[in-house]
Length: 244
Image (cartoon, rainbow, N blue to C red; front, side):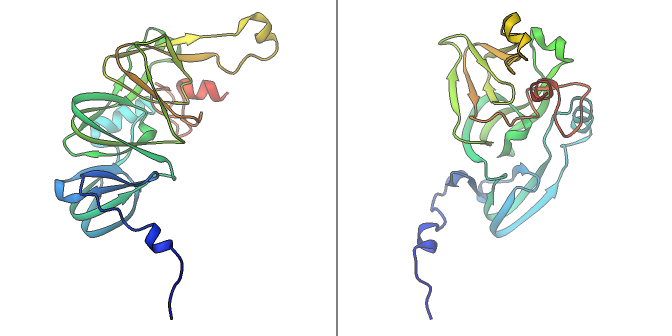
């Protein structure tokens, strides 16, 4: 008896010993020998070794209150032990970055995993136009260590210092420290409004120094587009307004 074909050879586990590495475009491999990590609750798809998982929910009472008030946040589980952990989230494409005493502002829905050395919190985005939406909130990841996020499709990283930069709030995944964000209203003119509008009424405007990461899908319903007073799971704020 034998099994023929290249399935098992073509999809063997990668041999990387890096703390965070790509098993493939849609699966993250974590080496647990470097210490505990945080991963999105329910994101474990497989592991080898002795790994334990503790569901921390929104990460403490303070974050629970902020999540209830803003609708933003992410449920994380603490992963400890030895071996190799594989995580994924709805077949989204995994992107890995390494922060060295730096910070990124991320849509909570796109956070997949990060080193235990990374501090995270829900923060209010400073934007002049945020008052019209009741306030904008995002998840900040700060410190030194690995961060893995997911995107729907391959993203583009836009250098905001090179030109005026704008993004659909349902497509913006994250921006780096040094980037400022504002809200731009674009009616498309009176003729466009009479025909029902463009569907691009509210846009995120970026300036400063750094990068904005945008995915090729308007599927982001929570995160930097989230406004206070709309804590439902269906999203709110700019995301809700864009979705109609």
